[in-house]
Image (cartoon, rainbow, N blue to C red; front, side, top):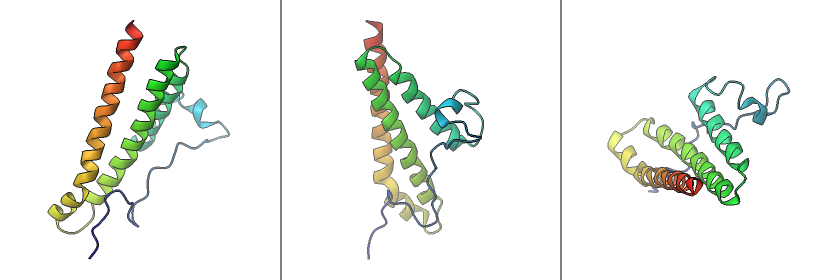
Length: 128
């Protein structure tokens, strides 16, 4: 009997799609139009894209790379969280689902901690 892989999307799981252009306007131009409009998943993706855009606009290459890395990790964490949520909402024994997804939860927590460390480092290095 094989164990469920909490990081592998199930057949009924649809991962959030990247923010796609609408009305002929590229996604990067829409970031500032309505950052809080739409479903929460789209809002999160726009916030992650805005973090990357803001980071890459920094003059200091160190700041650009710290922000870009934080943005990358935030994107991974967001997608992993949607897999965790999907797995926990499936039918079956709740404890078994939780045990199956526990490694993914631990990875999610590590990602969020690393994002926090990068944000702190970015604040410290921008103050000097």
